[in-house]
Amino acid sequence: SASTAAASRNESFATLEDKDRNFFREVLGDSNVITDTDALQPLNEDWMGKYAGKSKLALRPKSTEQVSKVLAYCNDRRLAIVPQGGNTGLVGGSIPLFDEVILLTAGLNQVISFDAVSGTLVCQAGCILEHLDSQVSAQGFTMPLDLGAKGSCQIGGNVSTNAGGLRLLRYGSLHGSVLGIEAVLADGTVVDALQTLRKDNTGYDLKQLFIGSEGTLGVVTAVSLLCPPRSSSVHVCYLAVPDFATTQKVFVKARQRLGEILSAFEFFDQQALDLTLKHLEGIRNPLPDTQTPFYLVVETSGSNEEHDNEKLQSFLEEVMEEEMVLDGTIAQDSAQIAGIWGIREGISVALKHAGPVYKYDLSIPVAEMYDLVEETRQRMAHLPVEVVGYGHLGDGNLHLNVSCQKYDDEILRHIEPFVYEWTAARRGSISAEHGLGQMKAECIRYTKPQPVVDLMLQVKNTFDPNGILNPYKVLPQVMAVAQ
Ligand code: FAD
Ligand code: MLT
Ligand code: ZN
Image (cartoon, rainbow, N blue to C red; front, side, top):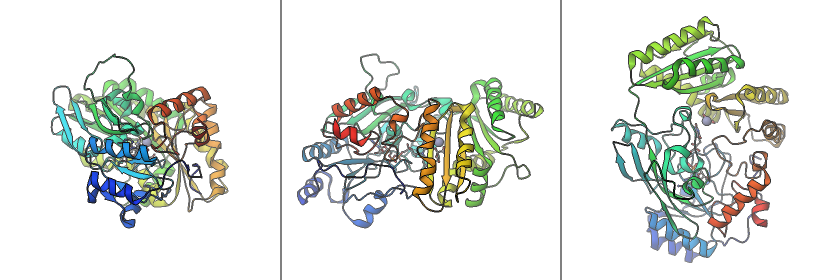
């Protein structure tokens, strides 16, 4: 099987009746109450085709007030709810396990305001990340996060997963750039913490709890966040490196030499590159004559074309002279920049084309990070799988992926719990940026001690006493039921 999620439905939840559908039609209008099997199918499936839900109803509210009415009703009726944004999540968080009602946030798609002095954007949760980036770009700003799924993922989904992405190295996590949140609790209470202040020390910072809570504490309906100025000068180089230890030397050098203009430091292995060149059309290998185990994408973003270019050139000369880098190339124009990013961002798409894939998203001390890929490869040498490693090296975030021909328990047994135990032994995290979702709901103990998990269960109980919000996700099932 594909998942390790809880196997049985919580029978304290009600099942849908005609009166429920009628209520939702009254509140939302017929066209926003989806019961058609064909229309429900893509909403019951994740991006990888790994998780399949059995929901018979999806709702598309268009305002915070409608979300509040829907949740208050579901809470009274004990109907379980799964919030769904762009449905690009990689841990099955937005997919129901059983007959949970899907609450789509796509209808909440308005930009509320943008302050072109501070760069503060206030918008509804269903706005698509790439659309927001184009809008703020017109005023000289950029979104503080960027990821391969930008064309479909929504800002509410980004906040709810605490998405990391390609520029966390530069702009930090959403815990820093989100200034405010409006969320609706299970009982319909609207929590208006939609401030736009940089500084606010009045008690507990509750908005932080919604960041990364994966729809288990409330439905995020609006967000305010700080957008940095858009860099007028962007450069990208692509480097071939002989071994993993050297990638870290290059990283240290990049931070020293590029300083404040360094904006991304990504890595992938030869296996990831080969897979991407094989499965994606239109991808050009920037260094066709160089075969090496590791490749880096290093980006600078600054405001002085000449100065930034000079800095990158001399960095490149230095790492080549010192033989840290076997070969390297600097993109000459925006098409070449897009080409290099196309490889890095294309890896997950290529893996999807290659077939079923077991994905692990881990925080591990960088020095040991790639040992895990090698050990996993050795353990699985006798199986028909391809083990690839890539990720956000500058953030200590490894993506370990095992690509195979079908989801198979025999394969899974060779990966889990090995990968989790290996990570726990190094005080790493079993989720760096994708979240726990349904994939890892039973696994939080590998990263968090029991008293911490107990406190989380108490928070969950306070926010959602009937447990209707995204059940079977994030927290262990047995314990959640026992509470
Ligand atoms: P969904 O998938 O719809 O939902 C994700 C979770 O959030 C679910 O648990 C859902 O219930 C909950 N949720 C969604 N919206 C709300 C809301 N308004 N209120 C409450 N809960 C909500 N992730 C990274 O961190 N970094 C990457 O670099 C990255 N790259 C990716 C590249 C590709 C090609 C793909 C397919 C995915 C990638 N992801 C990455 C994963 C994914 O895009 C992120 O997790 C993203 O933030 C999910 O946003 P979404 O709108 O699609 O949310
Ligand atoms: C990435 O960094 O490419 C994303 O997190 C997606 C993935 O892990 O495949
Ligand atoms: Zn990632």
